[in-house]
Amino acid sequence: MSELRRVDEAVWEIPRDARADMRVPARVFADEDLLQAIRRDRSLEQLQNVATLPGIVGAALAMPDIHQGYGFPVGGVAATELPDGVISPGGVGYDINCGVRLLAAPFSAGELGGRKEALVHELSRRIPAGAGRGGPPDLTEAALDRVLVEGPRALVELRGIGTEEDVELTESQGCLDGADPSAVSERARQRGQGQLGTAGSGNHFVEVQRVSRIFDTATAGAFGLREDQVTILIHSGSRGLGHQVCTDYVRRMDAAHHRYGIDLPDRQLACAPASSSEGQDYLRAMAAAANFAWSNRHAIAHRVREALRQVLDDEAARATRQVYDVAHNVAKPERHAGRDVLVHRKGATRAFPAGHSDVPDAYREVGQPVFIPGSMGTSSFVLAGETGSMERSFGTTCHGAGRLMSRTGARKHIGGAELRRELEAQGIVVRSASNKGLAEEAPFAYKDVERVVDVVARAGLARRVAQLVPIGVVKG
Amino acid sequence: MTYTWIEHTAELELELRAPDERGVFRAAVAAFAELLGDGSGEPLCHAISLAADDRGAQLVEFLEELVFLADTEGFVPERVAHIDLMTKHAVVKGHVGSPPPLVKAVTYHGLAFAQGADGWLARIVLDV
Image 1 (cartoon, one colour):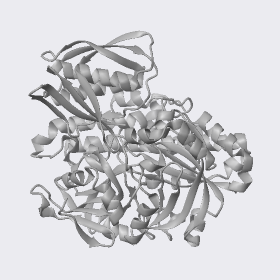
Image 2 (cartoon, one colour; image 1 turned 135 degrees about the vertical axis):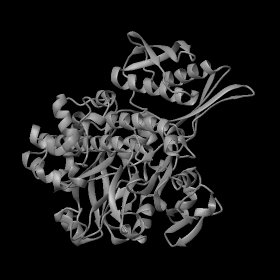
Image 3 (tube, helix red, strand yellow; image 1 turned 120 degrees about the horizontal axis):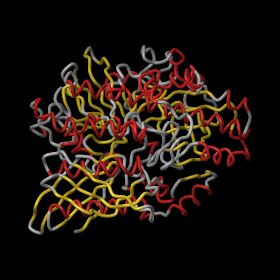
C-alpha cells in the first residue's frame, strides 16, 4: 500500500487516483503504530473498495480501530449523497445496531465490596448469553410489531420495562423513523423470537466496571459519573432478527445492482440507490431491526436492575441511571456540510458535538456521550463528541479497540481456563458460556484501546471524559 | 473432499476442495458439522431448495439455510444425503441439538467457486 501518505499527525490518505475505480480518496485516522497493525490485514483494500460506491462523498473513512471485515472494513464510514447515492446493507453489517449502553450505579466499588461476585453471578443467571433465548418479555406478534416500529418506548408502555428517561437518553431516542414490520421477513421474525433481553455470542458482553479516572470533571458531572463509581456496560445488538434482515437484503441487492448499472469490486458491497424500491425497503427493514436492537439493550438493562435489586436493594436498582446508548452498525440520513447524506457506520460511533440538536437536552452543552470498550480485562473509555467529528468524519468516532488477531490465533496463544485464571488474578469476576469463546476474546487479540482513544482525541473527533476498569464480566 | 479454515482477523474464512461441484457442498456441510457439532440427538432430515443462478451464490444460500435451521430448530447438520445441482435441490441429514450460535450469517465477501487443475475450489467468509 505504497500510495498511503500522511495528511497530518492523525490522518493518512490513499489518494483517489490510486485505483481507477475509486470515486473519492480513502482516509485513515491512526498513528504510526496502529497503521503498522492495520497494514497487516486487508482492511485498507476493503476501504478502497468502499471508495468505489456510487454517490459516495468526501472520502471513505476508517477509524483507528479499523480491521478486516467483509465488504466494508470494521471501523469504516461512508456517506452517500441522497436521494440517489447507494445504500449497502453490507455497509451496515449483519448485526444491525450492534451497540453499547452504559448504566451508572448509585454506589461505589468500595460500597459494592464483597457482593461483586454475587452481582456478576446474578447478571449471568438473568441475562441469557450464547445460545440462550430470553424468557420474558416474550412478545405477541402485535407487541413485536410495536417494538419494531417504536423501539424501547413500546416496552415502557406495554410492559413497564425501563423508564421514559432511559428512552430519552438513547441515540435517536431508540427509534429510527420509517421502520416497517412488513419489510421484515417471517424468517427474520422467527430468528428473533425470544431473543429480546439476551446478549448473544461473539464479542458481546455485560461488564461491571469501576470509574478509575476522570479526565473532564464538568462533562463527567453532566454524564452523572464520579471516581470509584460502579458502572455497567452492555454490548449487544439485534440478534437473529437483524442477522436475517441483512441476509435477506444483501441477497436481494446482489441480484438487483446490475439493473442500476452498478459494478462492484466485492459482491458483499451489494447495493442499490437509496431512492430505489430495494433501497427503500431495506431502509424500512433496517430501521425496524435497529429499533429491535435498542429494545434488546433496554430489556437487558432492565435485567441488570433486577439483578441489582436481588443482590443489593430496591434503591440500588431504582437509582441506577442510564448514561446513554449508542449504535455501532447503522445507516442514517444526516446533513453534513450542506448536503443530505446517508452515513453508513460499520463498527463506528456517532459523536455529535455540544450544541447539536440531536444531542439530548441533558448533554446539549457538553456533547454526545461515546463509549469505547476496551478488550476484556482492559479499560474502557467514556468520551464526548467534538466539533472535529462534524468537520472530518461525518460526526463519527471509533467503536472499540479493534481486533488485531484472528480467533484461532487467540486460541493458539491461550486457553479459556488459563485466561479466566489470569483475569480473576486481576480481581475480575468472569462468567462465560464457553471457555473457547472466552479465549477468542483475549485482551492481546485486540489493539491497545488507549492508543485508539488517543488518536480520536488528537484528531478532534471526541475528547476523553472518564476511564472505566472492569471488575466483572459476563461474556456472551 | 476437504475443508480448511483460513486465518481472518475477525471472521471465519473457509476453503473447500472437492473433485466435483457437489463435493464442494458436501465439504461445506462437513465444516459446519465441525462448527455446530454437539454430540448426538434425535435424527432429522432437511430438504433445501436453491434459487440463485451461479454456484457461488448457491453455496451462500445453502449455508444460509443451515444457519437459519441451527438458529430456529437447533438443527445440527452431519452430511449431505442427496444433492442435484441441475434441479437445485439437496437433502441434509443431521440431528436436533443445541448448536452454538456461532455463525450469524454467510457473506459474499471474496466469494469464489471455480474449477482448477486439481478439481473444484470454493472460498467463503462467515460472519461470527
